[in-house]
Image 1 (cartoon, rainbow, N blue to C red):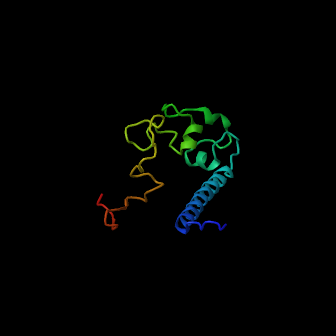
Image 2: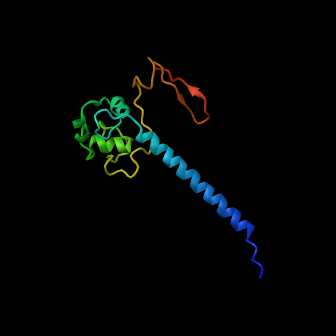
Image 3: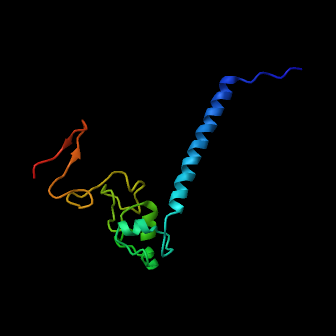
Length: 136
């Protein structure tokens, strides 16, 4: 008895699909490892970089349980969602972070924020990718 020949088209498709799943899993594990390896001096579950960026205390574990913006999420939950712990609606779409299915659905940058602007210059990109500096 001879063995039936495998359908090379289906076999190749399954192989490519398996490779794709492995690649996705690899990216997920890589991201998890980077997040898991971040320093957390006070062991409150929030990385020191998150706490420093938002002005929280990286040496005070009690700040993880505070809900500064009264949106129903503690600072720890805000850090997990990568949302702003001082703004109830991080993406300014009209839905508080605690009920928003995508609390980072768009980027919100307050003009004049020294982290994103320089002096009187506000540069932004238009649809045709030209840099425009508006008159102020």
